[in-house]
Each structure stands twice: as C-alpha cells, then as structure tokens.
Amino acid sequence: MIKLSELPKDVQEAVAATRLKVAELHAELPANGLVVWTAGNVSERVPGADLFVIKPSGVRYDELSADVMVVCTMDGEKIEDGTPDHLSPSSDTAAHAYVYRHMPEVGGVVHTHSTYATAFAAVHRPIPCVLTMMGDEFGGEIPVGPFAIIGDDSIGRGIVETLKDSRSPAVLMANHGPFTIGRDAVAAVKAAVMVEEVARTVAAAQSLGDPVPIEQRHIDSLYDRYQNVYGQKS
Ligand SMILES: O=C(CO)[C@@H](O)[C@H](O)COP(=O)(O)O
Image (cartoon, rainbow, N blue to C red):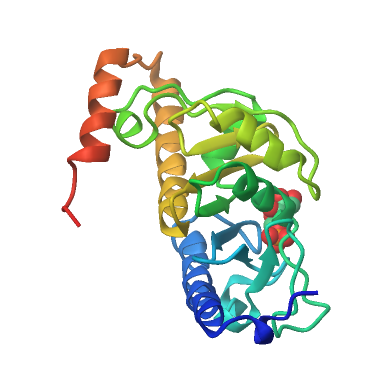
C-alpha cells in the first residue's frame, strides 16, 4: 500500500495543502444551508499526484479538520495517510474516483442533498433554463442522471454519462441529489451553492405559473459572457 510518508516531499506538501483546502471547504456546505448532519462531501485532486482528498464518512462537519481528511488513489483506495485505519473515506468515494478517472479536466467534486435540488431529483425533473443565472453558470438546463446505488462506481458512471456532453457542472442524480464538478473544489462548491439557489427560485416560479424558457441564442450569449468576461482577470 502507498505510504504518504514515503512519497516525495513535494507530493507530501501538495497533499497537506489539499487537505487544508478540502477541510475548510466542507464548512461551506452547512454555512450555505446545503446539508444536514453529515449528508454531503467535497473532494479535490492533489496537484502533481495520482491522488485525491475526501472527507471521512459520517463525521460531523465541525470535526472535519485537515488531519482527518482521507487521501485516496484514483481507484478510490485509501492510502496509508497517517489517519487511523478505521477512518474510512466517504461512502461516495468510488463515485468521485470514477469522475476523476474519466473526466481529466475535473479537479473537484461535491455532493449534497440540498433541499430544492433534491426535490427536482425526486421527481426526475431537470431544472429548465429560465433564469439568466442559469445561462451564466450552467449554460442550459440542469440534467437528471440515472438512479444509481450508493457505494460503488454506479453513481460515478451516471455522473460522467450525463455530464460528458453538457455544459452544466451539476447533475441531479435521480431520487438522490445533486453532484457537481469543477476545475477545482472551490468551483464545484460554487456550483453546489448555485444549483440549490436556482432550484429554489425555479420551484417558486413554477408555483406561480409556467416559467418562460430563455431562447438558446440568449443562453449561449449569457454563458459566453459569464465564462469569459465576467469578474476580474487573473
Ligand atoms: O447519499 C449519501 C448516503 O445516503 C451520502 O452522500 C451521505 O449523505 C454522506 O456520506 P458520507 O460522505 O458521510 O459517507
């Protein structure tokens, strides 16, 4: 088994930085009202190594410090990372690992059970692109993925199958909830916040009447501006 303490120093440093970042980002899930109790997870690739960092399963958010973040191979196997052997990674680890193996551009993955997005997942209904914020962030509707059992790579296969030809960084896995992807974990967390926000607004709109779809040419223009012009140049 791979031992963290035997990996090159620069890899160990990259793991430490990723652990800190992933631990801190988990606090964003309850802060943004996206999770109850322990029901969601964040992971991120370790730059320069075939490893990723994810939270331990079923541990409360206020206990998620950097030193309990679990380090896994791209097959979702925990390495000897200095945490106790009994500390198992998130039950969604195989799903995150599958996404990393099949979507090389993805550097972060997030899963929550946020209420409104999960309500759309419960009725297998995509969130239609009826808000400029959706054009900006998702480039179209937010799709529904297949029903998949928890614990193996079934969820990962559903995520990849649904998102590989979509501009959306979010998929509503049927009867389960949202999974989001991003170039890093910050981007994936942002997408998780945004999917809940637009799900809530669209649900409110649907209670008032029939939300009006945005024309495709306007969606394309919104997406292009937001992705390429909006904000500050780095
Ligand atoms: O969907 C599920 C289980 O129903 C999971 O996403 C949990 O809600 C979070 O699991 P851990 O990451 O704590 O294992």
